[in-house]
Image 1 (cartoon, rainbow, N blue to C red):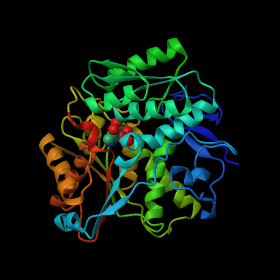
Image 2: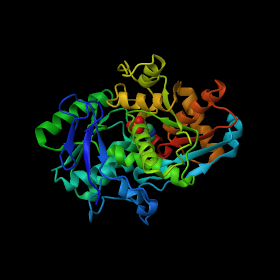
Image 3: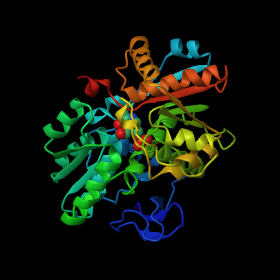
Image 4: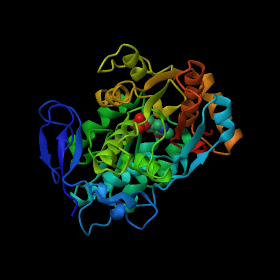
Length: 381
Ligand SMILES: Cc1ncc(COP(=O)(O)O)c(C=O)c1O
């Protein structure tokens, strides 16, 4: 039987697993799920091909059916051509664009809506750079729960159309995701809807960690030497790093093998984590006037800044920002050399690989995995 507690990532305050918790009441920092038991044997893996294959490592009670649309089990595609171009041993792209609603956000929302439904909340609200809103709309529909979404009015039109199609009550707001967040919190307070904002809700991280669990399994229970991840709110980075620590603790990975160096990819127009990393800081100052066409990266003040930076420092990783032209070129290069219709966020991650290679941060021995976090389809005008 899976059981867990919620533990504050900063002050260690804990809440029971069945609490309807947002952030820590003592210090305002995010909770992380602590599973009571970490199974030593891989026999616990379920015989199903979606992220719930890893149900034994997820917050799911015995006999409970997850709210699922077949998220996860995404392809890990090797590109010898891009590896050669970068001068590394091997390069794979983990194509998260093939998830329901076209992004990795499906994983987090499957986990979050499963718990919210079990806890009996009357409805769900989220501020979003776009893809999280589309994912919540889909999982809310699957769970037959009402959903309200606040998104910047600059969100790609294709993503806004998906949110409406899936029946969510969409509100566009001037400004960035931080402005949408203020509206979502006010609405949650007046309506009783549960706010599933990044890291104000503890379960999205758990869904995201399956990106890392799945990668390990796809590589035969080992990990690459470098992971490059386009970082906005940071749930993917934080979730994967948590997942790797759990795999280590369970003994599912070779204890002598180092964990990957984690690399944050951001856009020069909104790079709070890159700036904090360069300053060796443990918190990120909010970015003024954030701009980038990679809308998922337009997060000027991520609540999970400490946890993202901790993953980068602990893994001896890096954080690099690239200009808009490099993001466009990176996206086109991935598309034309691999056939993957990458989102600009994935293009940004590949463009960062080119910078890492030019600065000799990548070497001939490196095995690199680049996350393409979304599908390019929704970004077309
Ligand atoms: C396609 C895409 N990539 C990356 C991100 C950033 O995600 P994270 O919160 O995991 O940093 C987002 C967030 O909206 C996104 O939509």
